Image (cartoon, rainbow, N blue to C red; front, side, top):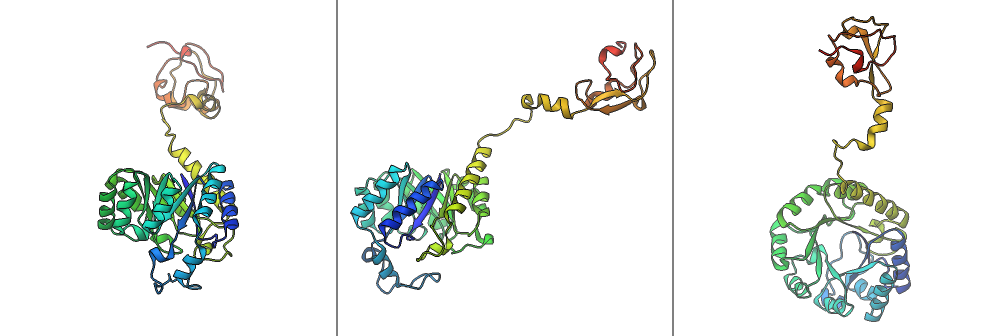
Length: 326
């Protein structure tokens, strides 16, 4: 599945949120993801802001851009109206209560909450599927989180750098996550381009998450590191093509589809010059030419040393019946 991460790009405006959902849906997202921030439940007033967004105090930003429960109901309902799943990251235990009231299907645990053991324990009690992002955690921390969840979870490789440089993507971690935890593994992409997501999909990631915006000029902490609709559409199209390729392994011994092509493009054994009856065929007597409807070039050594039972004209295909049986 492909997740469009709306984050806080909506800037607390329900109309913008609806427009983002519609655009993300049109761009091919399977799940449309938001973040539920309840400022007083998750952060101190003087908590520092990330280096990439200091235009507004973090507490004030979360408080200003928060939706009411009624607005969240409208958001979820609109996602479902378009046939898309509403997904949300809770940043507090109270947010889990609100999301349970909304009857969400699953949860996304953001990277910064992976070590919030109490939150994970509460999420486990919901018995819902949990997508766990690992952007700032060590193997030991991930082990602890997985040991709490036990089952019914997926894990995303992620690097919590905005934007993430290509040398920090960590595609190798996808393989290790699959090996260690025997669960579906995905990739939360914080790079600015396409290649990291394509590489992840090609290396076994069955979930791809990418930040989405109507325009990188929109206000907020996420917009400038997000994909615009036409870019997201291109991303979705190509990832789904990659998955289709991977889901359909080819048997190289099954040549049924190539019968006609082999006749057109492969070569047969042809008389290089006029050949006399009762002569012994030598390598210098033959040449290899299209079409591939005669004795295959692959089998020429079987003919060398055989005696012709008839005269063969130049550029005629050789046939097995042209030779005496040994």
